[in-house]
Length: 364
Image (cartoon, rainbow, N blue to C red; front, side, top):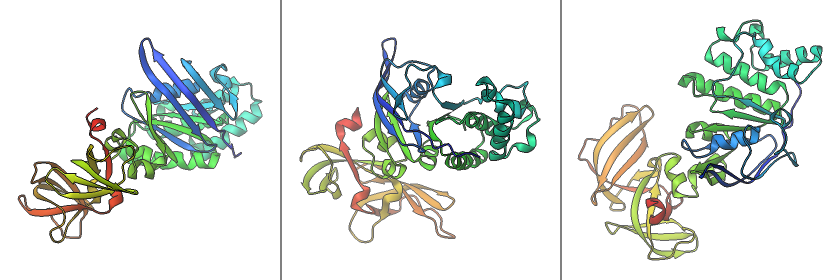
């Protein structure tokens, strides 16, 4: 199999309007060659619109699409060097597996011998060579997805687009196919963009994640940075789960800040950018970053209920000031949830695990 060496892809200040509605709001992304990027966000955030703009199915209102240093805006879809795997796979049911994979090559006028060789390579890569002569309507969902991927890669695209390709698969098969697509994309060296609303999918598969909200780009960073250091309150709440505590920003010293919670407890956090002392803020702490305190330090709370979730136990707590908190702890063999009404104190595992945002952002 030939190595593809995918191209860089630049979305330069992309704007798109449907009538008077703004679907994409000045989005700029610099995607590296061979990188897998996830466009993540809720329904209607603009991620599929961006994918369609890259593919050439719609023209953006303004901005530029550049692949490998060359503008591709005015090129028809077939000349953009883009392969796409649709949500419903869009296979031809009356064709065999091999005919589906070779369709794009035939449409481009590829020599028949070369097309057969490339088709065979792609089928071997997705482990479907033994089913080359079977009709696609006789395949399982996972097998159909492999055929769709082989067809998209057969034309040696410089950019591969995946439009929520796992939504029709059950959970166990979805994980297998996520791993498989990541392996194949790495082996082919193709630059890839996957559209998804599934945060776990984005965080596990992507080299970098672009989080979109109402057409605007909220953050574009590696998965660990998006999860551990969300750039905005929206990212903090959309990606993962976070407890929210209302507080006042009491003081800032270097890259550290002191917050005063509603019950009077002092809490140290990362220094919030652009906020002045005295500001109303929210302190956000993920459940796995809360610990049960030993001694008098921490926020006093009562256990409302607990849920064992395999390797972890999640407790729902209510603080003495009336706020709800979730705490996730590793479950030791034989451990069961704490009894409702159990009194305890909880505290962040580290200063860096406390993200701070303006209360205005939180209420927007």
